[in-house]
Length: 150
Image (cartoon, rainbow, N blue to C red; front, side):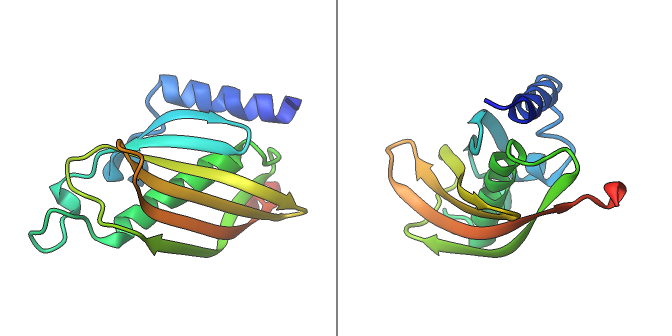
């Protein structure tokens, strides 16, 4: 593991120990909890609440699942970025395989499949406790120089 990757993982450890990864950002509003991560990978726990209900149904609206996947991608990419880089989404695709049910626990996973220069190819899934895939995702992101470093 590179020194850069070790540095990013140590930062994630510090943030996680202080609960800064879950509040007050949208991360906390969506209800995601960091479970584990490694270089290029992240797994989150998610139990959607009725806040995300779709017109009184027992399932959520799809945008919440897309946001959850993007957070998993961002954490997976963080360990592969230089200190002066941030990531931006270029294209994200989400396929809804089955409904994401309210008050059921899911694992949201994100993984960097490849980094080619400044381009990162990501994939992920929202999976139930029964290992049923509810949502699949993929995308292309870019690593760009942070404004504060310009």
